[in-house]
Length: 459
Ligand SMILES: [Mn+2]
Image (cartoon, rainbow, N blue to C red; front, top):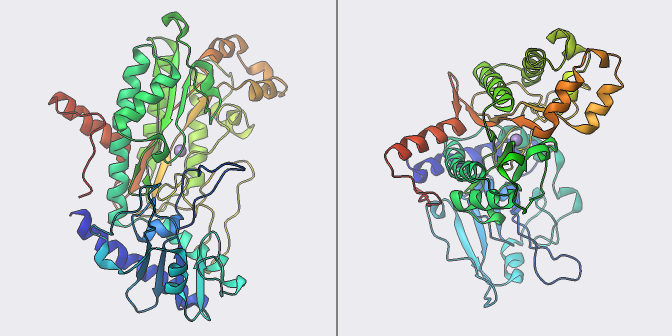
């Protein structure tokens, strides 16, 4: 089905979800404000504008500041479309595309006109946005009502078919970047050059990335969110490993893919192969009804098996998990929801009108404690890291004597290893959107039709 038709079904579902949540929480109107550009202190150049995710849930407009969706239960949604007359910046183009017929569009050229267009009864109106500037008469208690927002966030975990297709395309765009980055790494390029190769391959501006690329050569990958970029060339003998965690955006939907590469065959490639096998085992175990927390602990068990098989720790895998040893090598969570935001919301929310979910105190950084449901989009990203800080902690642990420190010291130069894919859960199967994207590209490479950086159309 084309995006045009998928979008029609998407907007119907968004209207249904809002209608249900608004009715329950006592609202009959919701205004969703896209936000305004921000200035750094004493500067006149704006930060990159990031639109309110609730706004782009309704309409695929990412650069459109000071616009608003105005939805009254039972009525066609209105879009207050701000098109300033401005010769300094590229103003938003006239509204065009498959989404326009789903809205009654009100064109405005000044923010005062936006305010005028939204003026009206606010008794049972909620505003979702960074501030109430577009609806100044609104009582403060109706700005971002948490009960309403929580309910919308809860349901956002389940994607419409339109969203699933956007996520699929975001993965394809990202896979192109990853192939280009891999080639740059194998050619001995610097972190900065690998980053630029990724952008060129994906065909995107850095400002369009859903999160800052993590391009970590050698020990840098022991930093989970490494955002440096070495620009000094190394001799081939100094290069060992790359972890690259980089995504792409498609109409406001994010992909989040991590790949690790060995510069030469040997022990790091062996560790990577083992981790990759564990990651695919975990992906194969994702199933409707399963607890994501249980899957997180299953990942700890599989990581413990690797730590034993590679002679890092001489303990039974079960004991390694229960004694917290695996957490010294894998301190983060197994994965997270993905969608309008790279770490999408709702991982800890209760189903509407149920009791809240509690965090597992042993997994403080796990971002998702819900059971797996059809329609969810999530990542699976196990890793093994050799972090100086946590290894120092491990050296003070009562089990320190069971650790093969010589072996660990030999691996510090690799930093770590991580493999991450984006999944979409269907009722009867799991779609691995990241691996599917790589497979499709390698099929294209076979046919020599791969154009790195080529843009797909929106339909
Ligand atoms: Mn991730």
